[in-house]
Length: 314
Image (cartoon, rainbow, N blue to C red):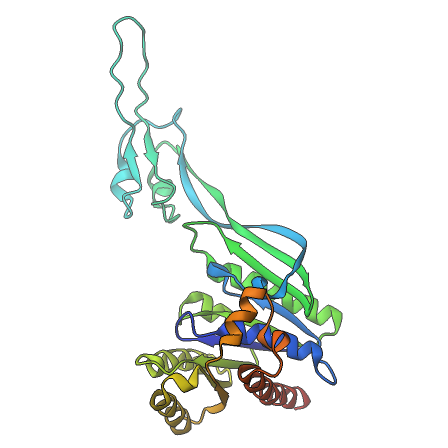
């Protein structure tokens, strides 16, 4: 069992369209490649939009923790507010006692859960042990059954940023199922960029496919992600999406790849059929198998699968 991760230097290059097409082509091949699918772009998971998954399991993902102040113990000394580097602690609003009713005003401070970074500096500095860390529900991850194989995907809650841990969890679950079920490969729809989620998605992969687009920043974006996967010693191929909208840019990408020993697996032309397929909720290779983009993706998949299977045989 080997892992293929599909990456790009920025969002919107077509990673999910490529991943969905690969899922269909793997299942429809002769012989088929039995694959477990994983959507590692947990910040904006959308592979499920074209695979029509049926959820089988739903699990909570507990991310970081936030500080909570016990008002019964807090003496209002203000040390916690002084050590907080994120300005997440503020005193409670004063309450003017009514002459008619006896009102007790608590001196406790208040923690803004959105501003709190979970560093726990206030916990260690509080002389009254009035602060404790509370784990927070950061999102959910799912195991689903799609028409092209098992799918693991997830969704972060708003303002949560523990996506690297969640990506690792999604990949780990997909890998375990692939090992237990005797699958041939895990196809990972990776996140864009070069940050922590990308590192988590690329870690342990056997092959990376970099989806580039011929724009002014296309080469720069590709350079960054190629450097990232090279740092982790992950072999990489490249493909150019919408290659015919700017032929000079596509030629520059190919020249860069040739100069740096990166094989270009193919070019995908601009094709309105891709948009029509997305609207219908299907991979383009299933919706329009004779469309130009579908034929290009089929050729790219053959090259990628051959490279992956060759690595399996070694």
